[in-house]
Length: 405
Image (cartoon, rainbow, N blue to C red; front, side, top):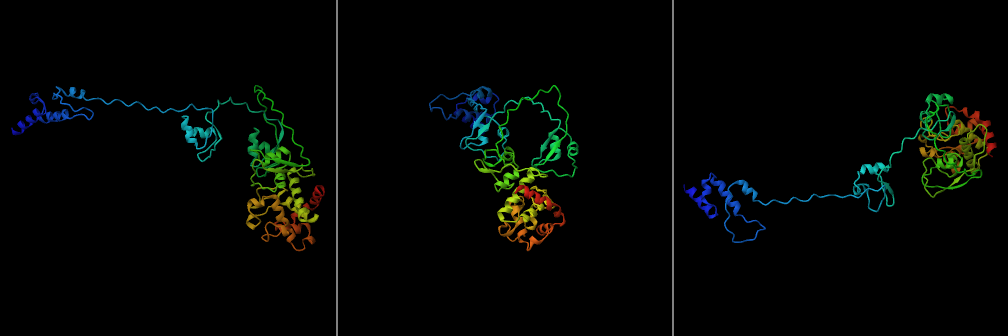
């Protein structure tokens, strides 16, 4: 009883009529209401306001609580993506994509870039793909023709490119499945099915610029995107001829603005291709520079013909490579060095100018090589499993030397 009276007194002191206790509201709840209504909001002014009255229902109490205004939605704006964008200092692909509301992956894909690619100020990036043109009708394949093998080609890839079977190409060229083709080799392309009559003829291509006259050689300043092979093709000479004329190898790097020598067109030598003639010229030129006799140069020509068919090949028995099939594992140089035709030729001749020094023994290092037979002299350098095979090229080698001077 004392506890009930004490509670009633506290409620009255809070300004709550005592009849609230008689309307079925528990004493503890009424006390809580009193405490809640007696609190002054932080933003209210302190006044001598009249005592608050107790709402008749909890709904009325809830309705009297001020509502918090909803925060306005935050809208992120992006710029309309242009067709292209010029990279500025500090840009990244991710920032550019976010700026125009694009996905980074899409921008990378449009520009042929990867996650590790580097962009630079002034570079122009595509930000939208042009509408895909209607697929062009396949160009008609000529009924017959020839094809010059490029580095990395295979017979099956060439056959697929010309829309014919691999067996057809093999048969047309007298080749088998184990035959080896090499860059610069010309092969016949047999007839293929003619295109349908309904296929429109392609628009005539613009007339190509006349090929420069290279009979006396010259020079060329490299432009962006050019390669040694494309330059050689433009001037009607072999890639090996350009490499040799500039002391370059297959792994050498060229750059825009660099000036390289263009050798003169190779003379025609019966029985030899343009590539073989270019390599023969290289051997003759280096032999002359080193003061090697005609017989020594002929031995080098015959050796290269026996070992590689006078081609700077990228394959051979085990790790043998290049014109003279020199083996890196036997100390003749690295794989790149033995495929450098000029260096390989100097190593074959040996002597005081041998790039290998005393690691290997060249023709000029063989005591009394002048008195050896053609095959014996070649074998003394090469140490081949077929020592007598070089003899078959003796007469031909002397005729090639006579033709090349």
